[in-house]
Amino acid sequence: MVQQINERIEALEERLKQLKAKQQRIEARRRSLESRRSRRDDTRRKILVGAIVLARWIRESWTRPSCAGG
Image (cartoon, rainbow, N blue to C red):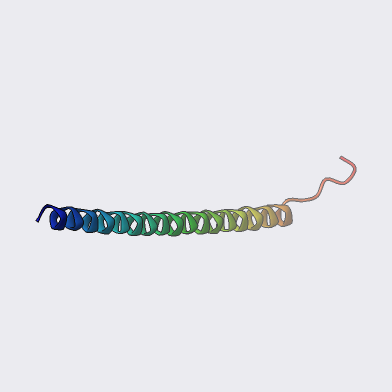
């Protein structure tokens, strides 16, 4: 009887260990996806800001008279 209880405890501890490992893998995947999404969004923002700055620079340089010999 005691041996059966000990075997059951060992089996449950092993199952707990497996579930904790699975939970860690899921959490690591979630963090990885979140990090990837964050980098993608940051890159998108930088591209958009760069496009805005470039468009404004082009517009400003075309509308201003050039100062030759200044």
